[in-house]
Image 1 (spheres, rainbow, N blue to C red):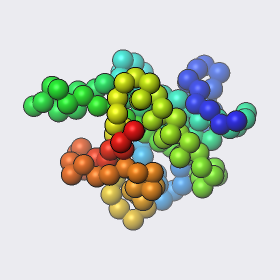
Image 2 (image 1 turned 90 degrees about the vertical axis):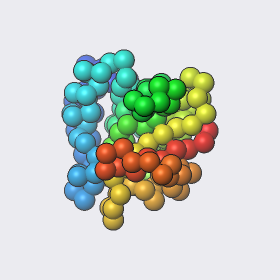
Image 3 (image 1 turned 180 degrees about the vertical axis):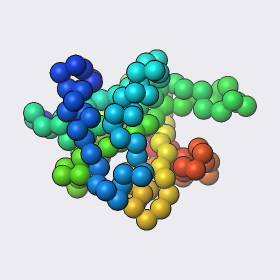
Length: 151
């Protein structure tokens, strides 16, 4: 059974061992960097190991109820911050599972949209997110496209 598990002392090394394909390496931060960011932002970051049976297959980090724009304090969002599926595990539905599980958590917390960002480009994840129903919002976050999924 596939599930999301909190990062603990028992699985942190397994999480750090998750590595995406070489052509994706410049598109998503390594898990160790994400965990460092989660450590310094514990009220914002929600890191989870994606596990199938006893096998770690990926990593997800989310955020909940974060003010998005300094010029509009009412714009508070929840979403997917990072998604790393191990290169050897890609194409098996783990990314879809992780996004769906996060969507359930966002709904449970009372939100109706799930946000994410992605680096545009040939090897980027836009097609993956679009197949899941994400729509471009027309915004950029730095050099990344912002997408939203209605829940």
